[in-house]
Amino acid sequence: MVRHNLITDVPGISVGHAGDLKLGSGTSVVLCDPPAVGAVDVRGGGPGTRETDLLDPAASVDLVNAVVLSGGSAFGLDAAGGVMSWLAAQGHGFAVGGARVPIVPAAILFDLLNGGDKDWGEAPPYRAFGHAAAAAANDGPFPLGTVGAGIGAQCAGVKGGLGSASMVTASGHVVGALVAVNAVGSPLIGAGPHFRAAPYERNGEFGGLGLPPVWPEEAFAPQMKGAAPRTSTTIGIIATDAILTGARARRLAVMAQDGLALSLFPIHTPLDGDCVFALSTGRAPLEGGFRAEALLGAAAAHVMARAVARAVHAATTLPVPNAQPAWRDLFT
Image (cartoon, rainbow, N blue to C red; front, top):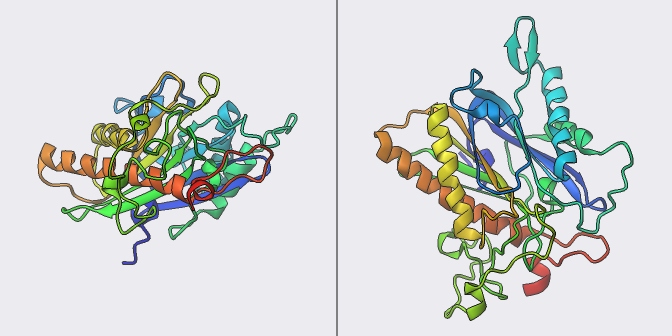
């Protein structure tokens, strides 16, 4: 099987994007076919989500058709409606008598102050973005950086973006991550080009720079984006083909959050709305009890950290006034 170092390496997962560079925002969607066991872990102090209560292991619906990551702050929650409409037209959804209701949890990030043209009047574009992203989804390679939910993303000192990575564990399970990096903190070590996720890099996937020989003093002081409260969020999805219950999938989401801590500093602040979903497509048994689950979660943390760095490394500067410079404009 050809692998692309993307979340679509997990069997049953497809990804699509839509957005507008001049508007400075967009939407990404992960489709699950067949539906996957879903869970979520919310850590930040200013989250924006939809249908996350449904992902409680005690809830009566434990399978999801899709997960949406979107820009647009609360306006971006409309993107899930567009995905639902597309899925319903394809005959997908939770059966209730003769009706079908697609289950589409979502999380949003704040990108309303990045210089893009947000003068959309009474018709925010996010429902249309969601529909277009779902229609464009495929299970192969897709672009990273300033695309989909990463179009308008920003971090401290450098533009954020959309990233993805994957790996095959020693047990043979596939783990993949998708993340939109819009953190109040920084993915870099001080003011230089080196990524905090450098120890976990594979095959030069974000430049192969490694760590600096000496960490500068500023690397130990928090660098934070100078924005108003509740305007930063890193939202992501961790997926695996391992068979997990809802409760075990939530533990995977919890451990995947560690990947944000390995690649962004500071993280999980009162200014962020950090949220990670977990998806189990249930293709391969996971044997070995809690130890096996712990190893799967450790892999999830490393994959998420790599996805964060890939997001920033691949990002390009928005074509809008006073746009935040991308890593490649600063260091290449």
